[in-house]
Length: 219
Image (cartoon, rainbow, N blue to C red; front, side):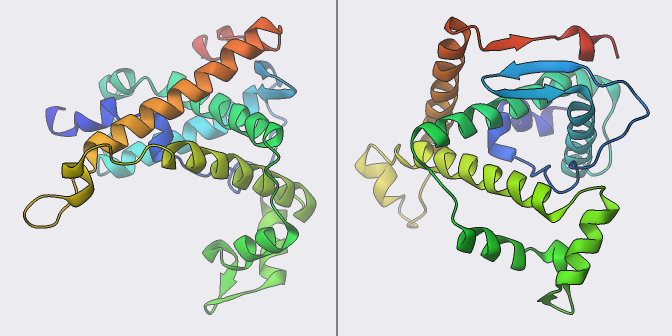
């Protein structure tokens, strides 16, 4: 466990997995419950459990296929998954409040350059639509989710990029001209977390932030 210790302290937002393609479908086998309300957005139990499975897959890859129950508990994957989903909603709210919009051209570029939708190295529209259909989604649904994801990612980068190297040593690097990015990365992570927490406090005051943790703790 010690050799993987760095992953226990790395803020979850720094190892984001884009869930929107693999999590757009629905599964009617289980009743849908509300896990969280974040401003105008709702996080339901079905989307939460899909993302939780994807998060476990991420860490299985990090730990080369090995993810024990002890590791799950140490990583607190259930809460990490929920926090990531909440953070995405908050960043989307912030993006809208700051006038960040993703143009049709930007959206189209993201789709046609996505390797998930390519055949023989080129974007294939029929393949694209078929993949969405297999995931029980439409192009309109997927593109709306992708547009939102891109907007949230843009403001995330804006917040983090505001915190650049603060010392000449960090800016110039060491004798081998290698920049030690760890201190800067830590400050960026701290700044992003503070930014998101500020929005949480605002939403709580307005009565627009509620959690139903029993939904995930009982499973």
